[in-house]
Length: 470
Length: 125
Image: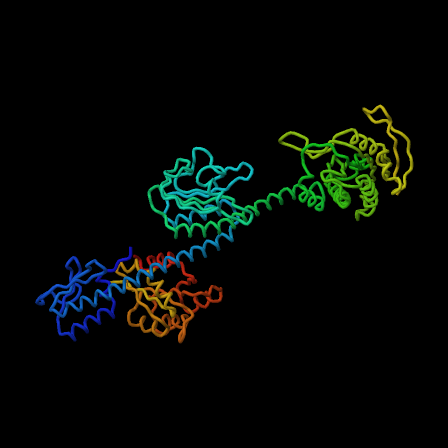
């Protein structure tokens, strides 16, 4: 409530000098006192003739004592007081508006800099309860999968409804359907109200609206009847719209971080290009084991154990890493996936996790490039000693994550895998061997030489073997 | 002795807002003085010796930097706390403010809570 005291009014230099001047001109000594009888102007021992009230609207804020003429001075002072209070009320209102603008200005600055969902929500609730009288406040987001609200931030008594609020349940759950902010100044009388642990009498609830729809609500409440006003509602709505876009940003950021994590994990197995394909075609890709038509490539260094004995272990590891780097590069550039390294052996897949149209062709092209790349590695020892044999098969296998919860491997399982492994083991240095299924779809693209048949462990029928001439 | 705060700004709205902001200090016996330009500010500071001055930078006749420099150096009034209050928020202004001897730098739109808080602190109330 804006008030004004006579003392303060007389403290104003221009008012005081005006009174002095008038008193002199009217030749009437006067005495001004406040309602408690304290002397504000003049001298106590003057002969008092009459008392005239100084009034602010209908309230008396002091007295002027003096001759008859003092009555007009009392009127003048009343007039000044009333003018002053009008100006003060206007100033107060302007300052309140200015505070609101300043708050929105500050909060938008802080929100822009904040990408953490919880932090954004806390900031909004803090500001809202600072600006609007409240004993509790909460920000809830609607989970689109369950249609239930999830509490992101709360102050006051911890928000804990007896049953979780959901779409169409509770005031917030209904408000999300209408999309309109509401003031409910007697919550208990509202049939939509679902009682929680918080004692609530008055409530303002505003939806968090984004361009894609309503994502949640902000509640501001008081345990006593506080009669929230339209101005409070407007303020919370303004805050809610700021909050909605900041929350949307924070959620997008979280999503992006998650994708980055998946991406960096994936990039160790497949090329960046394949990772992009996987991330874009989310439906096509899954870590769940499933049947897939793929080509499998095994590559191994001949007599590696013997070579190892020639060099100190550190150097062997250094050379092996150099060699793997080149081989992985070739595999990735042809759309393949590195399944695993077993010692010096490389197992690669073509067609998983993302599908490849010409997986057999890709595998042979990779094998030829691998053989040629070894000869181009700028370490003479590697060129002379790392001589590899490669085996390729294709067909339906099971691919996906296999292992225990502590350790999972994305791998391929099936007969065809065993065949590729077997072909690799019989391949001489610099040789690339493939089975019939690979040969049948690529014979007019590459040169082949028929090798004969080999027996594969666990298979009754021998396997036809072809050598790729490159 | 009663404390005094001087508000210096050429914009009547800002003067009104600042005065209203500082109203709660008036209840504590603090006198709030107003100056509408740089020259008036210098006169008031000489005459009234305020404890704290909120000084606008961009004003006609004499800008806030000049007023601050004059007070702190030429007039040699060191025990007045001067807060530069300006819409400019660039690093250059802050540096300039420091050079002319300002004690603090606040940017517009000013934060009413911050203004009150700082005033309490500086006046030791």
